[in-house]
Length: 373
Image 1 (cartoon, rainbow, N blue to C red):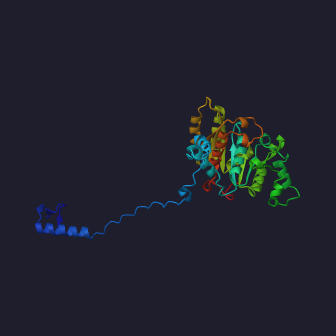
Image 2 (image 1 turned 90 degrees about the horizontal axis):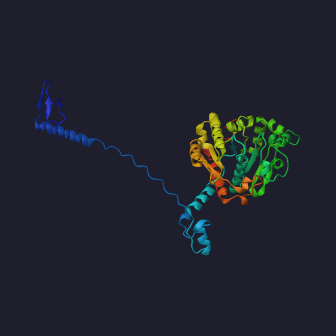
Image 3 (image 1 turned 120 degrees about the vertical axis):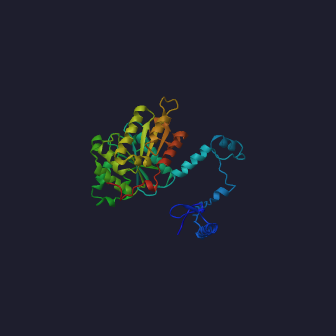
């Protein structure tokens, strides 16, 4: 066997390179060509085919033109008696999309949404009631708002109360002779201790009015109440106290809630405490948990504010899944019983967006067996 150069013109005789005869060069070249032709072609992997589009019938129905109700398009439609239809504006279409998304039912109930803030007077309890009520009006899930505030809460000031019974009365009833086990409690029995507001599709159970009794309620008491509520309600909205180190508040933030809503005012001191709330939860649940399940609401935003609200939103978005704002509403600012018909359309739509942001997908949920108790 001879060693042949790459250009097939020389061969090595052991001492020096010698010119290669033409016939040998041609034979070697032919052999090389035959060898290359004999090699099987390299298979080319098929390119992934694009997913087939889904057929949506309403997209091809020319008669199903949406009717605008707002803005210039809505006014033209009404003034022309329906003859001029410019279709929905981008803002109106976006609002309808948020409504559709907010109506998505809970996938893996029961779900617990905690509304928290380390600063009082920021509208936290009001936000909990508004969120629970809006979810109830938009969805078929059974929702209840629970006042877990060991200090004086404002649930009783925001809704028309039918009685004075509270969480403590429910616990006393469970210890009484009418039920042998907690699982024997029926829904009609439970309704003795809740307040139902039909016009808001809101059901509420409040904390005791006596501060000594409120502070005496511990983790075991609330765990017991949660287990009872989980049998009948799909979504439980929890209004927490401002003391993050309170036994009950800390327990709910660390072990119970599937999603967190942090309420911060459009004020520097309140926003700082809102950031502290996020940091407090991140110490136990991690930043990734917050970025998947936390929503920050900047509340009571006014147009002539001296606070850099967009800058605050940028900061909070680094911690939470989304940061939203609620404009200051004259009706909610009064502090009395809220009425959806008196809340401004702007604030109403913003609350819908918050509900859309708070809807809990299955991948965000912890099943009842996985939740630490």
